[in-house]
Length: 209
Ligand SMILES: *[C@@H]1O[C@H](CO)[C@@H](O)[C@H](O)[C@H]1NC(C)=O
Image (tube, rainbow, N blue to C red; front, side, top):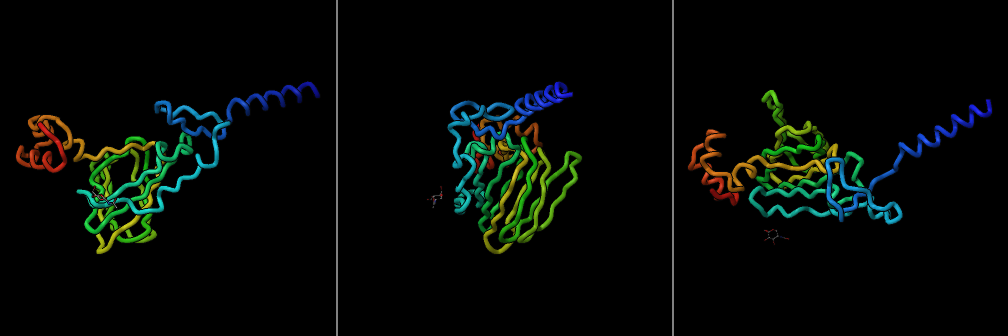
């Protein structure tokens, strides 16, 4: 009986050592991988790896979309590496918009702190779900789906978003189509948009071709 207990206890110790790692703070000097950054040596980890003070100030919204997304992803906040979470601050000036975009790596939860935001997403069945959100409202955007946020109020708007990934990624549809050198005839053939409209958007967003 005693021997059996010792064997079981030893097994539990081995099992817990094998399966539990408290954290894996990103070693940003190495490259990201599909399963996150390699871990920083735990002896070099300090509390500053688990605290990020970059979301206290409004982002600069003097830009074409009149909006600023200030991320606290692994690159800015290495403590979230491996934890399946991250966050960002979203500032929308009057008339600001986060254009149609996706996060390939994670679902998003948005909390409105100030102002009025019209937000929505489009399912893979092409059904649209959108609503005007007010202070205190929250909305989720499932992983990988196209979605947007528009400041539909008379003043500036502020929201915080969190993600089910430490590196959710961001692809803005208009930038993907019009901010690079994909030839205009290919954009036209694959979107059915007019060449003139494509050239106009390439001009605005910095694309060529
Ligand atoms: C905000 O961005 C604009 C455009 O890049 C720039 O001219 C301006 O100086 C920036 N403002 C601040 C406070 O950084």
